Image (tube, rainbow, N blue to C red; front, side):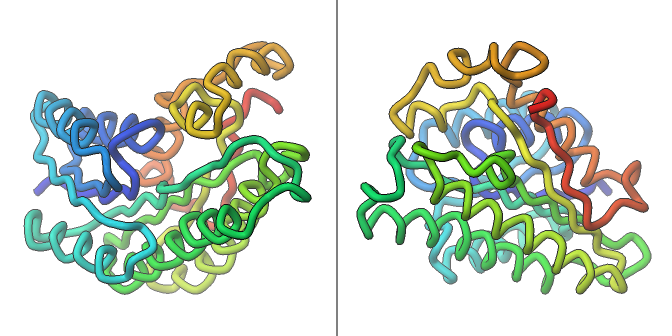
Length: 246
């Protein structure tokens, strides 16, 4: 039977690239999305075009009931769960911390931290405690170690929390043969820059990266899928930078 992967925030960007790449590698794919039903439908079509089964579950990443429903639907549809990618996240317009309003900070931390904790908690409860084990991969950011001053210090701090969660949870679940790792993308060409008010940010800053270019969502997805696979069977508690040397 094909393995099953569940991805939070799988309709766009890195999540979508991971969903499509997983389907091409033979995984059954479930993913969550927030509001963009058209993007979710397109992702489902791409997964099915690769010959895999797909499930899209709409919900709020910060709502416990929606998170539970995503896991329930995945197990009901596919009968198994082998890997979970904790990817859903947001960024806001570029601002120094002194100018950030409370509602922005609350939304940032609710989505990027609380939402990730809820999704990871359910993964810890539902992944198999068996010989085959399972895998959790967090999508963090190079911002966690760079700080993103004058732009997104709130986003950077939220991803720092994800790095800490990765390290702690990897130790909690190692005895159950559940591997927990994280990837830290750098400047990647995705829609997240436009949502932060800077659609040209990756291209504009890409020349400052040691590799002289931004990365692609597909390049990050390959790292995520490797960490989910049996090829990474002795890898847990790792934070893999996919940042072009930045």
